[in-house]
Length: 241
Image (cartoon, rainbow, N blue to C red; front, side, top):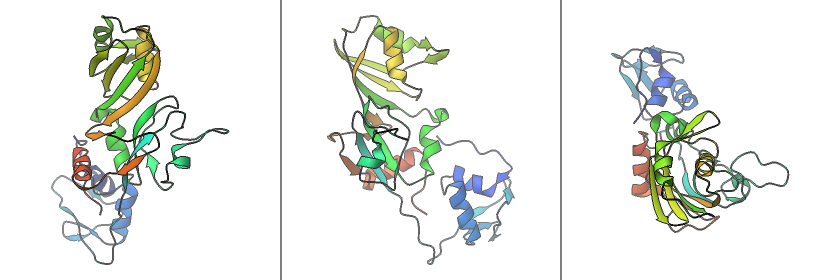
């Protein structure tokens, strides 16, 4: 669900909340005269009320931004952002240097991460208020105790934080699926440590309705067609403008 719009507010924030542009992109549209407020060209800094009518008009001279959305399998040992020393980041090896990763996946973990150049997506996908699901396949060294699922679903307090899982599925004595709606630092490792389990392998297999599928480490696919439309709709964003 999208954030509730509280009036009055600046017109660029209004357009961003409606998923029509980033705030910077909205300012560019306004400067080009492509935004109307109550039938007249909007101005930078305009504030709007709930009764105002805001329109984004089409102009043949204004070429819409063609955003890209890539499903990428981050290999283990690769840094998501800001590598240090001899470390490598996703940007170094993905083949998509102009795109940025949405969120983080720690160095020892692997699996699905979305790459894009669409700044509108960041807040809608990552902010905790939206509670989007992320699914992980986890292999542990020790045998999973019978009480582990109940403890993990009830929540684990660690470093003055309450860590919770939305769903837990035990697949085998050493394998489980965890679905989270939070993104706290090393959350799964910290939760499993509370039930005396050591992570051997951690793979993110799904973000919302986007699945890793048959991708192998380092491989990618373009999110397009119905899958792209479904993803944008799920975070209440419009297509490229």
